[in-house]
Length: 332
Ligand code: WQD
Image 1: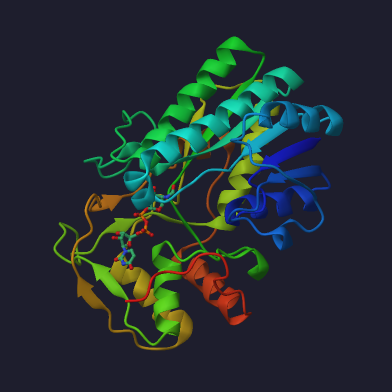
Image 2 (image 1 turned 180 degrees about the vertical axis):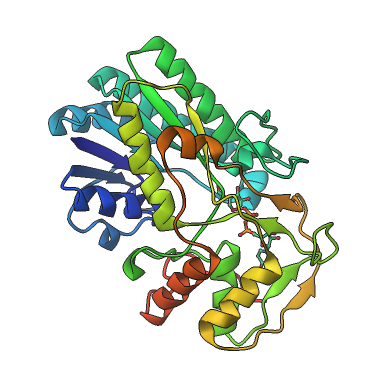
């Protein structure tokens, strides 16, 4: 089995690469190293390539043929909601154009199995307790829209070619499976809180007036290692016979509030944390928790790690010296 992992030098992609290598599979990583890190791809062949460029299709198809790839996992994309609102054209061009190139290359090289990184961002602000895949997506920002359009593209590619695809809708991913693969960007709650604490600043809670038990937003935090295993399960599924579904939520089915996450960080570090309560952030749903029924039933996947494991692994990675070296969260 040979898998081409596009965006395999990134935070989530590199965890999947590591698992595939541990299984003895052949892995080719394609990454433009714009945010990915070469050091995360140890043990895999790395092809430096920006999949959004006009000549990327031919180059990708060449790599697929040369390596004998039978499956592709596509991670490479921009993933910052705020940036997508400010610069939607970049998101449409790169996220959608990149995927179009990848699918065209798969069709030309006759790669059949494709796993795509989608997001809970496709759902927008759902007014339900548990989000199931049957809920009609209604993205509320360009980032989420590009992921939803990406899912349509997979469906079209399946119809047009001899292809099988799966879209995994990630909920809030955090933690580290191996310290050296930790998230080095400071864009999401857990890394932001750890970063602020390291700078001697109090974490800021974005609003405590939500309709939740402690007033702060609830999310479904999934350990990146569990998420990586979901990709392995998705590849197995594509290689099997029965294929009733093409989209799967990936989360734990458990919700944690912002204050609960901060408490877990305090426990992991053995310190007391007194957060500041700041303004609510525009476009934040009060709660976003997934139903994991479909993926459990169909792929046999279930998360193994809870919030404390997630937070502990993130703290350990920072203690091991894996601190931000790609993007820095602005001061203040
Ligand atoms: C989590 C919670 C904040 C920082 C985003 C994308 C989503 C998906 C995952 C990729 C929220 C609160 C945060 C802080 C806070 N991405 N918060 N203080 O917004 O749930 O999801 O990442 O697919 O599409 O939207 O994640 O980590 O930004 O926030 O109170 O300093 O923490 O309001 O409730 P979010 P997040």
